[in-house]
Amino acid sequence: MWAFINKLRSPKWFYAISAKLQPLFWVAATLLLLVGTVWGLAFAPADYQQGNSFRIIYVHVPAAFLAQSIFVSMAVSGLVFMVWKIKVADMVATVMAPLGAAMTFVALFSGAVWGVPTWGTWWMWDARLTSMLILLFLYLGVIALRGAFSSRDSGSRAASVLAMVGVINIPIIKYSVDWWYTLHQPATFTITGRSAMTMDMWAPLLIMVLGFYSFFIALTLMRTRSEILRREANKRWVRELAEETN
Amino acid sequence: MHAPQGGLMVAIKATLKRDLTLMLRRRGEVLNPLVFFALVITLFPIGISPDPELLASIAPGLLWVAALLAALLSLDSLFRSDYDDGSLEQLLLAPQPLAALGLAKVAVHWLLTGLPLALMAPLLGIMLSLPAGSYAVLALSLALGTASLSLIGAIGAALTVGLARGGVLLSLLVLPLYIPVLIFGAGAVQAAIFGEGIAAHLAILGALLALALMLAPWAIAASLRISING
Image (tube, rainbow over all chains, first blue to last red; front, side, top):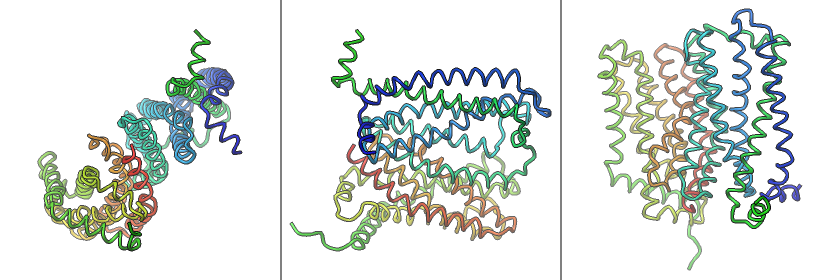
């Protein structure tokens, strides 16, 4: 266990192991996303109430899943960085933040586009949309805080603390927004076809979710590798690597 | 060189006394959030409509949002002057836990910001023709809620105190975390107006405060360490 954690400390080791893992996840992501998209858009049956517009679900739901998981992974990386001072954990958290914000935006945007045929409006103060919007602000806060420090180490530690504070607050925010929503607006609509999805609608969704996760892992590995090179540019092994490739 | 005298309580009392004295000598800093609160409340009838019925229906939310913004504005000065003159470093060097001393500073901040805002809110409620029967709840919910706001906000203030222009960033960090308190605070006043039970809202506000009291001091201490050492 400790040997493993000690290995994780070394960016060089991470750089080597991620070179092997990265292609696997890229292949998985490409295949899953391709199959899921074609199946979801062309072969899954249309919803009996929403028609074809329900197919936005195949982007919307995976993006929303990722938006939340990335924040949690970011906070966990922050904790690992603060407790064990593992630099790679901070690099992972750094590269994950913009991706998480982008996924939150995708979830919000696809939700708004979906809202036009379903609710007849681009924006509703729906409980889910509202908590997603707050999540986007939390992401922007973490990114802005990291950028505001001139010393990278302080910025990293501040962003880790904020991510951990945020992750404790996310469930509280989620439940209070749900409460607020039920208090203010009676449910005049429901997103149909979500709870009672048939297998042939649900299977492509599962494939899309898995595809989005593989894509996220592949992209995180790739961006962490470049972050390692950028931060360790003065180390000998990076310079040797650069000489080899030249 | 002698061993530090006194235990934790002595240090907390000293911090409380020092901060209270300092704040009371700078009366402007205590009064400014209150003036801001009154000003923002004045803007709404001008910007929306002087119609008493309309104002009464949105008054709980307006009062809560304005009080929240006033509390937010006062946050930047929470650690700022101590950071500038170096007394924050002395707090870090103290043998007593930083979390407890930070908590004492937050308590003073609430006493001189949150509590006055809560006491002043009913007065502004009259100006917005807030329905009768909800004034006590307004003050009570604000008193409970602003304590959580001070605790959560202090984390943001501690994270940004080392930055030259942390003001806008501070609000960006802190406002999303304020939302649960706003929901249940304004909800308590709404419930009082509609004659529903307010106990649930106040209980949840109390629960949020208990949670913040338990966790925020550690986050404040960690953030202060980051800001000082960075």
